[in-house]
Length: 306
View (cartoon, rainbow, N blue to C red):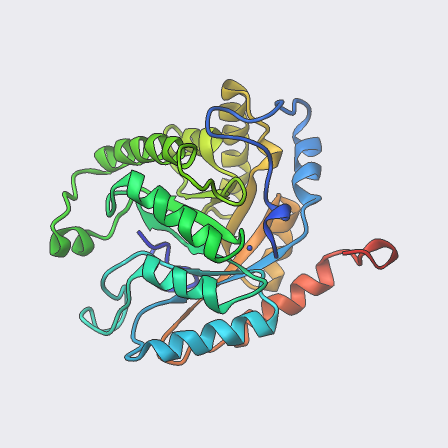
């Protein structure tokens, strides 16, 4: 399942900035206190800019390869793709490439940026195999993979490739099963991943999705506006308290809304902003705007130390 960023369809720097301790069965100590205190802890994260290179309408993979190079050179922190089999806009049967094969290519091509899917479809691959794939890309990239995952929503992907589309409820139940099996398999693989691979969960369902975020995620990608985000942050904090996790360790992620709105969202705790661009051109003008804003907002390193 791809999360299409910055488009009409509905709708991370090295890993040290997004780790936050083990979370598969509940995280470290819970942070209790006022909402403003928790918000301050979230705001202490530096802003990061991602780009989602949507692998549609690029008739040759070289166009995507070139966009990856340009994005890393421009200074983005994370390069995402998405996990679909068909375009989400334009010609519904237009050119399209597969997600995880492409992530292995990203891993070999890049040197600095984190990479990942925004997000992997929970029902598209055996979860144990997905864990092995993620571990392998983690090694190829020397520890720069973000494992983005969600419940799935694009019916054409399921029907054309022979997967059971089910219902929203059944897909959420399957996502939970995937997270249980995936994290268990990651602990059994030899060799082990180079680091605890950060898990990004996309979605905003308050009862089920946010519970899974509390239990498993280091990054939460949401589509909420400012008012809705404030409520969902409180609900996520409640889930985290119930499972013994520290909600301030979970990075908040949204699509890039423009510089004016981004500042308010950052004040509400969002630190990862992702710009979506599509083929064949992969125009990075808006990405550069977001990078300039990031560099204005982030504090200067102390004593020349990053």
